Amino acid sequence: SFQYWLGGSPENLQSLLQMVAQDYVEPVKKFMVGKEKLVNVEPVLLPDKAIWHPVAPSIVFETSTAYFEWYNKEFCPDAGIDPMNARTIGLILQKSHINTKDDTHYVSLISELESRGARVVPIYSGGLDFSGPVEEFFYDNTGKVVVDTVINLTGFALVGGPASQDHKKAAKVLKKLNRPYMCAVPLVFQSFEEWQASELGLHPIQVALQVSLPEIDGAIEPIIYAGREGATGRSVPLADRVNLLADRAMKWSNLRTKPKVDKKIAITIFSFPPDKGNVGTAAY
Image 1 (cartoon, helix red, strand yellow):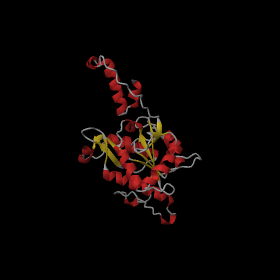
Image 2 (cartoon, helix red, strand yellow):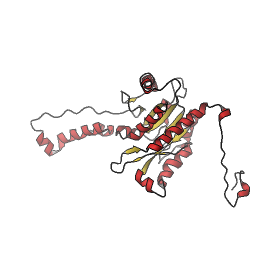
Image 3 (cartoon, helix red, strand yellow):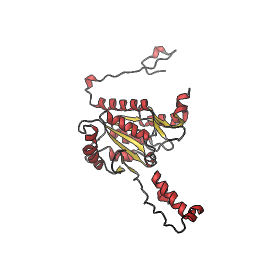
Image 4 (cartoon, one colour):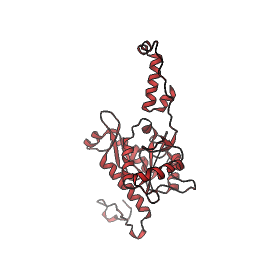
């Protein structure tokens, strides 16, 4: 029974309730007298880290080789994606959302990126240390980085989450990867409606945990892209924000290969009275 509970999916929980009811719930036990017990399917347990795609024939892939074998040869031709020239976006997900099929916000962004001609590599971890999957799945067998941009969709720091962030470990992994690292924000402490109606905006606790801490790792673009549906509490994508997030990821990916002569840099300078005389000197 514990394995069903660990599995966490609706199918696993249904099997758990069915097993418990037949053996321990009196009305059900009386009803089942003289009848054959229902046979429970074996628990379906996902590995602790893997690559996941919503339309893949297998639930997950445990190697990037297996994933790209399916993705490049079977999925990309049907989706109109050129796997040899497409930008590749790495996505960092939470296993709990995949287990419970609370994944609509993930699916929405994946679809938007692929509709723009990008390949996606959605990886997940069962814990709050996402550095392992990053090092395992964002490189090929020769050690070459296979992604152009990374988006962390958990809203948490790369290592340790909100409670035990390990910035040094995260920085080491991200410096080695050397790719733009975006950390998008799913609303946690507010529903979508509450956030929209709030004059304060994002809840201060969430600003600290899911904006400030990821920025210490080097994360950029904290775009709110999903919220909680008020009645069910399930995650829902915010369409315009998902589009914005997909557009920004594509722009960062294209910037990597843009000729330097065509790149433009904007420099913003602190200028606040009464210290106008120090503009541009980095002094307050």
